[in-house]
Image: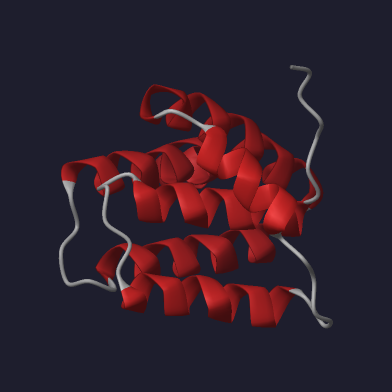
Length: 124
């Protein structure tokens, strides 16, 4: 199946949904964080059924590859401030159920390493 590039808002939704699923539990608190992201990003009501179908069709061993693709899609369209904002949502999401699993930490680190590695390693 060919990969269609996603706009940053849809890519952000995919990132958060995968991040919420990697521990195989989606809490109501995590759902509320994703809903808040959607409220912030979509000024109008949008149907995400097709996006949910794409995400739901992924097998766990495909999550990381998809995450990396949509992470690149988001990066390409987003400003640094927008990337930091999504990263903040991702951090809040992983903390929402009061447990940060090894899998969640791994996916968060992918965001940090790929989006902010230059600024983390920059000389003062």
